[in-house]
Amino acid sequence: MGPSGAVAASCRAAHVAGQPRPWRGGCPDRKIKPDQALRTAVRTEVPTEEQIPGADAAQEAGVSPSPAFRAPPTQLPDAPDRPLDAPTPPRAFGALRHRNFRVFYFGQLLSLTGSWMQTTAQGWLVLELTNSALRLGIVTAVTSIPTLLFTLWAGDLADRHDKRRIILTAQCVALCAALALAVLTGTERITYGALLALVFVLGTANAFEIPTRQSFFVDLVGTRDLPNAIALNSAAFNATRIVGPGLAGAVIATSGVAACYAANAVSYIAVITGLLMMRLPAFTPAARTTSTIENIREGLAYIRSDRLVRTLVWMVAGMSVTALPYVMLLPVFARDVLRVGAPGLGSLLAAAGSGALVAGMALASGRLRMARGRLILGAGTCLALGLIAFSRSEWYPLSLVLLALSGFSMILNNASVNALLQSRVPDRLRGRVMSVYVFMFIGMTPLGALQAGALARWFGAPAALTAGACGLLLILAWIMMNIPELRAAE
Image (tube, rainbow, N blue to C red; front, side):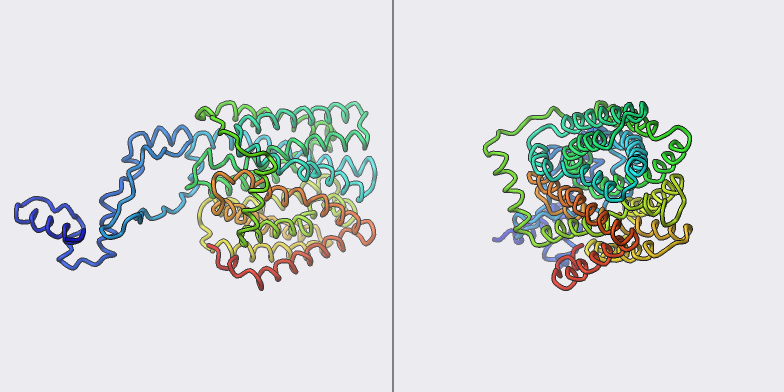
């Protein structure tokens, strides 16, 4: 007698004895449809997260319930090794239900506000020291060079070491560099060479912190709320783009550039405090059996083996070279094209940030139901067209609207690429793959900054921005025609 026959016999015996049937979806001899039995089995056999002992405590601690808390997946007769658990949809703002993520997130909000104040002040300081768009591009390039040098190593460290300790160390180094910039600028001893050296130190701290932070989110919220955490992180990054540059413009006008650097140094204390307040299980390092070079090669081999992952990584690189240098050119637009000065520069950055904030919150709320592949390609196209329109605008209000549209499109693209990548990457390779993503996203910025700065010097900032946006359109057109799996990605 097969498994289904045995179930039928037990059902008939239970019915005769007046006992509950062991197969609650109905007896097989009653011709219950298989899909109905499947739904009934899932509904009656699998406990909810609220019914799992200890799940609430694990959730409050900021970690997902361990496998010991979960019942095994229900199996149908004649269907061995086939779990019936249906994937649950992500909860709106679900990442904020995890205490560790909340503590980290709100500290990050203050720290990012200070970082945007420093970024705004730094562009203005370079123009005051050198009056050169090319040298402004060099500063941006030097900030990103450490990403080229150290990010892949940082990904290997993130997969093998305590991520919280790596982030803490990087934040402390960044605090010291920001404080040094504040002192040198406030005492009028800052030089172009000293600025380059200190932004290199800041870039080095970021090269280790950013890929580690990207792979740290899954430790804070689990895989279910990971896309939500990524969207909320993008929302925070861009909400502070509204507040930070606006504050910087007012502070520069009243207290000078040094006050912005000092504010950034103080803001690092918030994220450091949040990291120290987290309640995480003790870190147990895995036994190391391969070298750092071999580990990096393993991550690169995985990217080469998956054409969709490879396409996403190279698309991010192309966007970093062609379109994203628009942020570096905004001081030139504010001073020479739109003639709105430092307060206007803050408003331009805030406009881009406001559009990006709306995009991040829309993603975090779960209201955007479009497939990720189509969202990535459509948002990238809108970004390129918005930047072309902005480069031709000489009317300040229209420029603000176009920057808001560009910021909205950029975050829809970037956050969707990040979430799609992390949904495909095995946990043991997450740090290394995300380090390659950061390598392409930030490490290619020097090339983008140099090409945009050189073109702006020879042909003007509007022409430089138009050329870059057209380059992005060509990249996206090639992907649409040659990579069908991205168009179909959910």
